Amino acid sequence: MPSLADLQLRLSAPDSADTVTVEAYNDGRLQISANAACARYPAGTPLTDLGRPALPDLKTPVQTGG
Image (cartoon, rainbow, N blue to C red):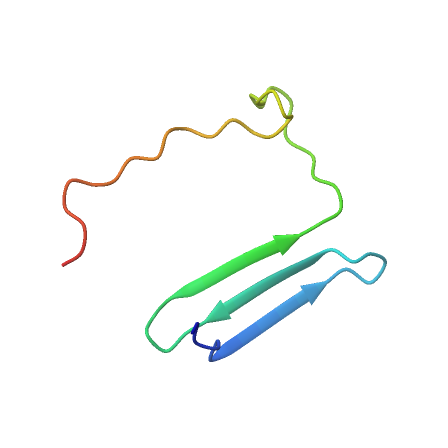
């Protein structure tokens, strides 16, 4: 079961349903999310065939954890 955030801040634009949420947890985790009906990318942003931004391959560091 996911733990509830210890602190939550939600911002929303007065004239739309767009939101930004920041959640902080006692164990030090921080979660940030955004929701908008429309997103615009800077000119020249590489896109996939689906029109989404092309992201670089994810790489895991050699050492993970402590």
